[in-house]
Length: 141
Image (cartoon, rainbow, N blue to C red; front, top):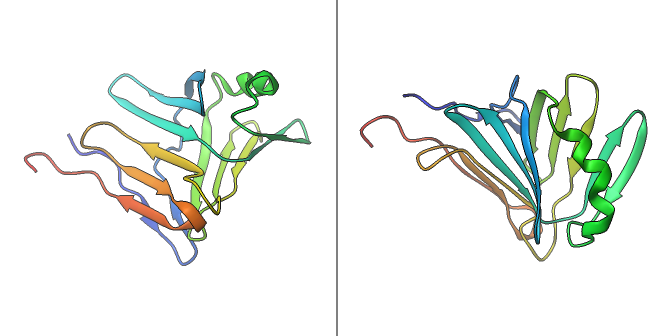
């Protein structure tokens, strides 16, 4: 099975999430979105400050402020239109209904991490916005 790759552009990476729904929203020390269906699953773990733009309103969140995260549950079931990781460490995700999630890099910690299975894609926004990408392994690797 060939897993999708991130595609590099001049100032961002296009992450292969188009058409994938939010299957679950989880809260622990981070805010986590489980994305996908059946065998193609990704996990987006948000550890830094992020924005949710919903119905034209911009809301700011800190994952450690768990009680404030209620509006983020509206992401459940939404389908991703695109997801870009900027080379400066930000993540921009837009859904088909226009809802957006923006995550800025953090100077001290990993602001966000996207993973796609044991042999899948992994993208991390490290401290200071350094982006690390591990592309999926092909069958037999």
